[in-house]
Structure formats: structure tokens, C-alpha cells
Length: 434
Image 1: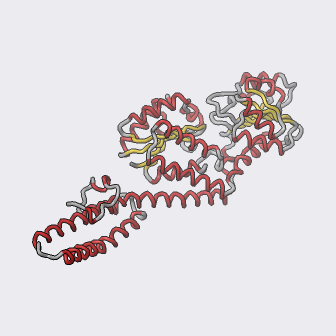
Image 2 (image 1 turned 90 degrees about the horizontal axis):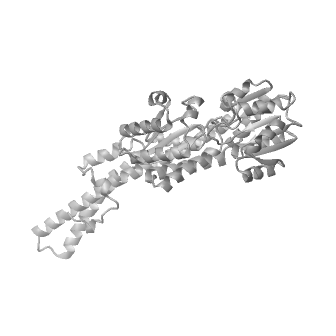
Image 3 (image 1 turned 45 degrees about the horizontal axis):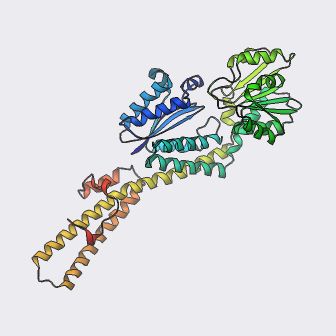
């Protein structure tokens, strides 16, 4: 089985299309149902986040897998295939694994260094496991990707990127500073935590945290000596705030144009700055046209996103990912050649045993000691002849494509193509039968 990735993200598609292609939980489940029902797909995992929709699949053949996933992706997102296809990317085998490692390590994120994607990949894989959609191919790739990501976050400083984005956004939208102002955070997740810490250090007068789950809002608010409210009370908090940072995981608009306009009318001319770092966007883009409102979102902050992380940290993160990827690919190729090596030794054992039985028929009077010495000698000769090619083929498997050297070995020794797949463990020479 080979790993295949078909998807679209902020790197390949405009945000307006990503918003349309985002999948709710019920739609995601139905998509997976249809994907794993396809005869072209053996395993499947869906990674659906605020800025990417990707299907990871284990397939026997490339073209049928791509065709099946592309058709189902268009059908379930509701975006016509002709409109979707120019923005869809496809990765296969080693390139697919490389993409998974980069995504999980946040090197492919809109904000390089953000930690949320690690949890999202873990959650997507758990869903695949719970559904029974994940097998050996996905398990091996995802587990190694998660390990690489943990190393990246532990051994580099790219985690600071989130704070850099919030800080840069606030500097752009609140050039006069934040001291003495009231702040509202809409959301209580990882980015909201970064926002709260940044606002607290900037000297704001007070912080209000609004969330659909009051307990989550209370937990975050307690860390910054703020207050917590449920999101359905956000109108009053919006009216009283000078700065708003919105970063929920909602599927649609949280702060409508009408709501923002109502808050502005109640502010006696005080300006309102809104920083929307959610995708899909939390704030209606038309709110930017309201007099007195300054609205910045991720689209406008793209230049900041591209330079938010220190170059040295990114380079070190990439080195770690490349190192982990090389180890994973080499191990996969070595394990791929192992069945062929076992099949070769099994065939040699069968040949030796057949020849020893023939010798016994031709020399029935040969005494037991001589017979055992002949058998041992023949087996030593065969083992010595096979040692170098079997060791070398395993070494070379890590340097070339996963099929080239095992295929050469099968052709060279006329092995049954089905034999390597059927072999689990070597058959002892003594017990081999023709």
C-alpha cells in the first residue's frame, strides 16, 4: 500500500474558496463513509481544519485513488469539480509522507510554528482509528509525523510565532498603544491564550473572554485576571471594548456587520479595532466599511505571516523534519525488501533439501555421520553465497525506489512474485520441504 494525499489549503486556494469547501462534522463523516467504501481506497484519514481540507489514503494504485477522492471531495464540499480542481494538490508515496510531516510540524501552516495543527492531526487520526479506517500504512506514517512534530516544537523556537502574529497585528491596528484600553477576546482556544498573554503584557485596563463554553472562558480569564462571559452576551462586551481579537473555530460568522454597527453606534464616537485571526473568518468583512472600525484579518496579515518566525528556527525545524523523514523512508524500504530476502532464503532451503533427498536415493549406503557432514557443508555454502546479496540488497533498498532492488532480486533468482507477500518469517532450512 502507498500513501496518497489529495487536498487544498491556504497555500493553493484563496480563502473565499476554503471557506466554501470547509466541512461540518456531519459532512466530514459522510465523506469518509464514501471514501472508504470506494474499492480504490484501503485506508483513509480526513484532516479538515480552518485553512485546509486533506484526505490521506492508503491505495494500491495511484490514478484510481486520485479519481475517487477528487470526485468525492467535490461532491461533499458542494464546490463543483471544475472550480475546485485548479486548487487541488496531489502527493504520492514519499512526497505524501513528506507533506504529512511538514503539515504536522506546522511548516505548512499559515502561521509557521502554530501548535494547534499537532492536535488536529492527532484528532483526525484518532477519528480514523475509531471508525476502523486506519491500518498499518496510516498508523506508521502518522505516528512518525507526530514524533517529528514534537521534536520540532521541543528543539526549536518556532512556538513564538503565534505571539509574533498577535503582536504585529496589534501594532498595525493600534499604533497608539493599548495601555488603559479595554480588550475583548472571542474564543478560548490556543490562539486565544496567546492573545490574552499578549494583551496582558501590553498594559490593557481589562480583558473579557467570550466563549460558547463558559468554563473554557473562565479558565482563560482567570490566567489574566479578566472576566468571562458566554458568547451570547458578546454584544455588551463589544460595545465596551476598544480592541477585539476574535479567534474561534466556528464554521460561520460570529460578529456580523449588524452587530458591529450596533456596537459602534453605542460608543459615542470611540474607535474600534478588530483583529480577526480565525479561518473561516469570525467577523463579517463588510464590517470594515463601518466608520470608526478598523478590521484586520489573516488575508491582510499575510506579509506578517511570512516573516513571523525566525529564519534560523524554520531552517532547524526543516532539518529535523528531513532527518525524521529520511529515517522513516529508509526503514520502510528496508522492511519492504525483507519479504523478498526471506522468500529467497526459503527457496534456497527447499532446493538444498531436495538435493539432499536425491543424494540419499543415489547413495543409500552412505553412513549417518557422512550424510550429516555433507548436509552441513551444502548449507554452509548456500548461506555464504546468499549472505552478501541479501545484506547488500537491504542496504541498497534505502538508496533507490522501494521496488527496484527487490524486483531485481526476484527476477535474478526467479522468485514467485506472490511469494514475498506471503512470507511472514523465514522457514528453517532443516524443516523446509520441496
